[in-house]
Amino acid sequence: MSLTKVSLIDVVKKQYIYKLKAYSQVFMSLIFLQLLAVLFSMNGVGSMGGSTGGSVELQVKYFSADFVAAFTMLWGFITAILITTKAYRNDDFVFVTNRVSSNLSNAVFLLTASVIGGITAMLSSYLLKVIVYYFISDLSIKSITVLEAPMELLLGIFSTILYVFLFCALGYLVGTLVQISKAFTVLLPAAFFGTLILEGLSGKAGTVANVFDFFFTESSLVLFIVKIIVSAGLLFSGAFVLSNRLEVRG
Amino acid sequence: MSVIECSGLTKVYGGAKALNNLSFKIEENKITGLIGRNGAGKTTLLKIIAGLLKETSGELKVFSEKPFNSLQVSANVIFLHDQMNLPTALNLKELLETAASFYPNWDRELADRLLDYFSLNPLQHYNGLSKGMKSTFNMILGLSARVPLTMLDEPTSGMDAAVRKDFYRALLKEYLAYPRTIIISSHHLSEIEDLLEDILLVKEGKEILHMPVDILKEWAIGLQGKTTVIDEWTQNTEVIYTKSIGIDQSYVVVRNHFSETEWQRARNAGIDLTPVTSSDLCVYLTSKTKGGIDDVFNKG
Image (cartoon, rainbow over all chains, first blue to last red; front, side, top):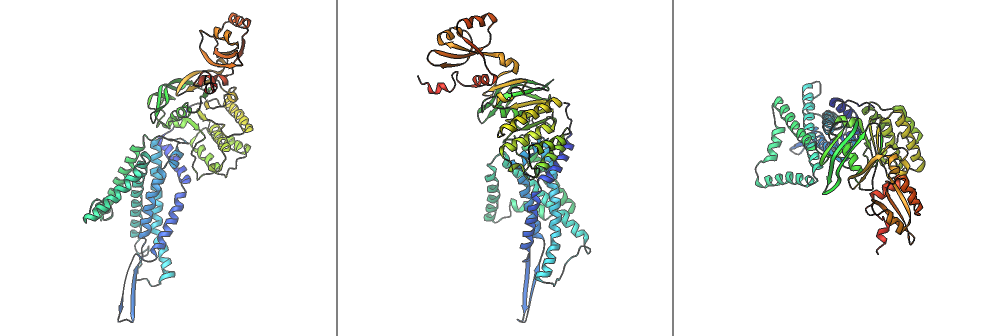
């Protein structure tokens, strides 16, 4: 029987198509999480109120899809960890693969997941508006429609996608570290919460706050894109290098 | 052309050597039986060949490439075993379709017909299958993929007698129609003996022997007779196995170095000469003691 020649790109493409089907459960959990976030958002993300002379009472509430976006980032993080686990990683090795192609197809899959997650998260604000209109109050003081500000919506979707992808990259590295040694399941949370608590006690803005600022308060769009892409790239490369010697054990 | 070439292959698992300085070659388009006791290193060897594990030391070439992290090796090797992890979200039909997309020689019709013959429901999920049905499905994957190197680790585990028979027949038919290199590891040597061309016998991670089955059948001979006579005859030969029968009779297996005249003399001395089946021989060769389980009970 003659030997088959394969190219990396070709195998990655096949793995990607197969993963879209095989990992479809993650999208079920996305829908569930986003609905849950919409439910949480119904109370409004902020409110102010007042009364004049006791006869008129005014209450203003802000509604936004911030919760949904935050939940989607968390979902990206968890999904990325999930697909580094043995059950998913070893699936690849039933068919044609090596560690590079497996990692690459995972990254492309996570990018797809981020795009889907980012778009649905931003669109959920319209679901929220409809729910608020019918069940909470039909008086809307300010509500931006798509036609009014199409660029805002697109920008919102784009940046949410990037944030979700960044969390995917972080989750992928964390998941890979855990696959290398189970000690990281304790070490990583301990390091994260330890820094948080220590910095909280000292009362100064520390590493965690700085990292948060670095990514979430960038006002220049170009710089923001560069920051996210470079960071996600570094996180993924770290995971690729670390997992390139991982064995497949039953 | 050698499909697999390895020399001095060693794999250390947590301090213990699963493979210990193993060297052998496997030629193209042969069916080789990988025989050994539990824990002899059969599965470890197959996993290293498939590129799932990395060798600790030594050299291994599959299709003239190192298998670990090689796409070419992965595309030309299929390795099926009973602890396989298949994607849980896909049903059997989807699994076959996925396999078809990865393996260019995949025979879709054969896969469907086999699935139908063994009455596997295409909408069922792999995890819901019984042990024997999982093995059956693995076999369907292995045969339909038509990959130059097919490795089956304990392919019949859990299968009932009828399915086992069907499996051997299907394997042979497929092999004759599309010759390829096949490695089967199994405990049931007597069942697969007729299928095999070569036998690779391993014990404690080392190669004991590697030869065609036909030669193995003549390789050793069993002598039975009075213990005193037998002892005299076997003084200068390598004894593979010994068992005492009754009070003064014993059965000894030795290498078959005897010439025609020696055979005659042995018969005249009252020794029964019997051929040793390859299955028994493999058990004798891989046992830790010369007397087998009897030694445990014979304290004296």
